[in-house]
Image (tube, rainbow, N blue to C red):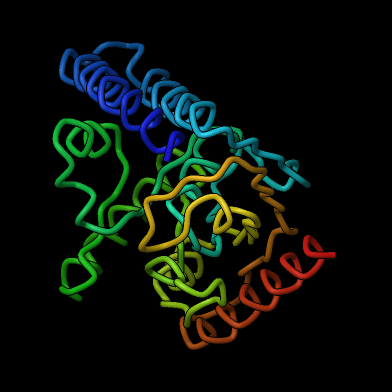
Length: 239
């Protein structure tokens, strides 16, 4: 409970400050806006992790190439998954997140202004439009687009069925899929609980999966390959 109180005391002013800082540089059309849109959320995530007593360890981080577009797909067990990836992943990152997060006062607007993408899981037409925006960003900005193909956090720790959006996007753009297994975040904070426990979260990146030569008919097979890669990465981390 102490950790939760400490995080809540720190997160509110930190979120307000970070959100206003991002909005300020974006709407002023400041030349520094791309840099601030990357560094400010990263600093915010690192601050929350420090308050929570959570250490992040990366393995095989060289799988992420900051100079080329990639789509990172990760398992999802905890809110700390987002913080772990945001705090440490090298290069320009763009999250594809559920629409509900856009409603967070100040920060939701700031995140959207900086180019992160919200997807409406209940409206297929809008979801397709969001993926079109992600496709344009991949083609024009060469970021690492981060997606959680389960769509929501797992309550048990077992991976849920994958949605196909990330794999359709990869095939349409010809961009590699990079699997990332996140281990230990559920022990820090489980779905449905407010209790925060200090600990270590391991982010283990797998080797990129090429989509060259694939058509949309192969999206299910690509999803299966990514799921198999994540299963192997998680098993290796457990050992």
